Length: 617
Ligand code: F6R
Image (cartoon, rainbow, N blue to C red; front, side, top):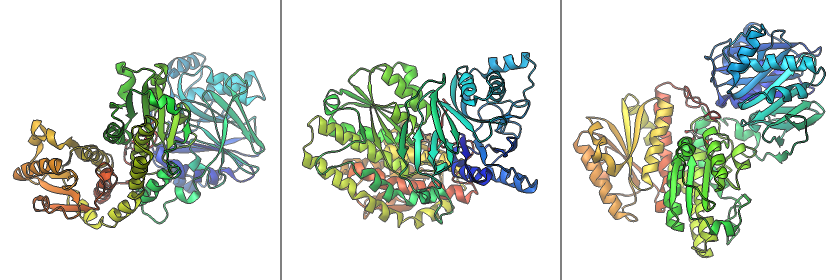
């Protein structure tokens, strides 16, 4: 949510900052803006409502040069104040010496704003951010020459979540950045330095990075960086090497990032598995929880939002099956508000692609306050949720830039399953050879997903055919039910179409009333060989909806002759074990949603109103 970049070095800042913003536009596209400091210190600003292309056009049309080698840039996902030019970042103080960009929400901005107004300051935007520019200018005047101390003093007055980056005309060649509850990484180049919300912004220039801790600030110049606490004391931070390469953050010939990310799913699953089995044991990434602690777990609670939540629903089936432990799945946004029953023996699995989602982060904190142990399943090294957890499984799916989650969903499912196997192993419930067999089955999935991807022409044609529908329903049973939920979520967010996922057995308890002539209903069908009873129940459901005029779109295993006669459209998938079916069955639903959205003329990488990392509650 909001993308931030800053650069200091020998090169012209503007092209580097704009390039960084392009790589982070998925974080917000309500407006974009840059500030560049010239060699004498003066700060020039350009900002524009709407997508980054609008800012590019402004710079071109107005022939804005913005020379200088110190710069900051911002893509906005609006929280306070509409997506207008005047609310676009950077924001400046009254003298124009300070320019500041912000990601997050400053919860006490109203009293700060009132304080400034009563001191005669005229604010020019509706944002919470602008107060920082004015406060920082005043703090710097009180301690000239020490921009970091001035920023620290401002941060100590702020409540809420923020990443801030500021430049000051009187401190040429320096940027200060600070963070609380929002992401900030430093990129350490050769004679040049970056700060950004996400490593994607600078991996074209350096892959050496610094992860800042909570309530820390960093001052950067071309020569290096200096990290401290808000009060100027020493601070613990972590350096790391980014193993994603630049290509991973490029479209690589695809029309959209989402198309590329769907195509990358076999690799994402293979990479998620990589290094997580040593021939006899499942290995977690940052195992700060010993086997002894995993043995005493008496309940698992999986928390996440959106797609991550759907992956948690699948985790329930697998973890209960392998460990016989009760597994609850909870929307992270609800979790801490309902006083959940947590003890030292509860394992909370926090699933998040970004590792930044505020709802999930707060759920993690709540769980830890209650002394539960927390294991993070995450895709983003250096993010907050893993940092605050007791153990981590990284999904290594590579950067996901399309706002709708695709390859990360498959990565999450696999990583969640690894958590289940790790628990079963620690508790002595599965022998090494059994774990090895499950792992080997997972290792066959990249090939099955690749095979599935070769069969998508039929799905794309279907997407075009049903793109005018008013709604689409998705049905499934057992692991097919979370797949149905995920299919519906993809369609809602990408095609802005009404879509619902139901447990097929629930149909007769209400949703069947929605069925009308021609309504497309996608049914995820289990294997007739592996789950004959479930299959026959689902067949009845298909017949019920067909009898009421629905257009049946049936996703089934290759050669399922029983269900085929009842399918208006049949989508066959390679046979795989029951628990692994979601890894192939989700793929056509992603492609379907993308194709419907494309046919309706929408940008599938940037669905309206959404942002990739939701860092506000
Ligand atoms: C859906 C989607 C969102 C995210 C959710 C959680 O396609 O992308 O529902 O899954 O915002 O995000 P993370 O996984 O980053 O915590």
